[in-house]
Length: 265
Image (cartoon, rainbow, N blue to C red; front, side):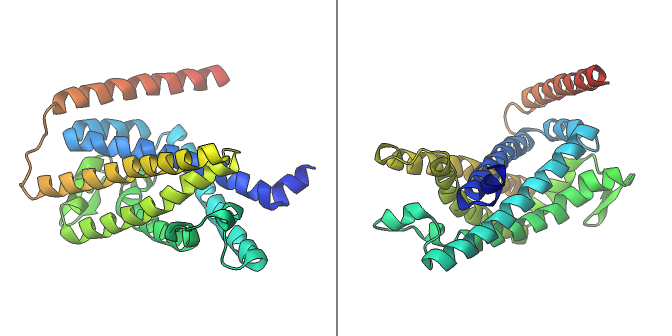
């Protein structure tokens, strides 16, 4: 019984939904983290300090990498199976739609776009921040300057102040938006919200979720570009309050993590 759950098409779609939900939650957290940078470098660095090379952040990163690989592998397997069984129709629900959206027919292509953007993101930020800190580096090269890997704000601001990177990331966010508009809908469909009543609601929810996440990322990137080129002021209003709130939240979260660790030991 358990074997059929793992090997059946329904089982694979369910695992796709679970992994997709985890990734949506992570993207939401990451977007909120970027919003903190718009207001104050100290706020962003406080979050980076909480994460950094701490064991719980490393464990979460490994888990996230496994989820991404699982999600991508299942996407490839399901796409091959669906094409063999039903030609170009990817999901059973699409067979009953009058107008199948472009994103639903090209989820694998959009997935590759997301993966390429993820690789760019890892090279620019994760490699110079968490990885550098894990390797014991005290400084990393950011353009012509050398900064501490814990100064994530300086790393992010360097890249987003340059228009080629602005364009690249905005294209990535557009691809991610298209992927999420169908992905969130498919996730809800797989868990059973597939009635006629919920069809339009799921479409609306998926658009809202995708727009909030990708729109938030895009807005942060544009604001950081404008700040980096002196068009918008830095910090924005309420910077000190945001920094204080982030520092307090990170300290509380760190204490909670330490308490859990001590209890477990």
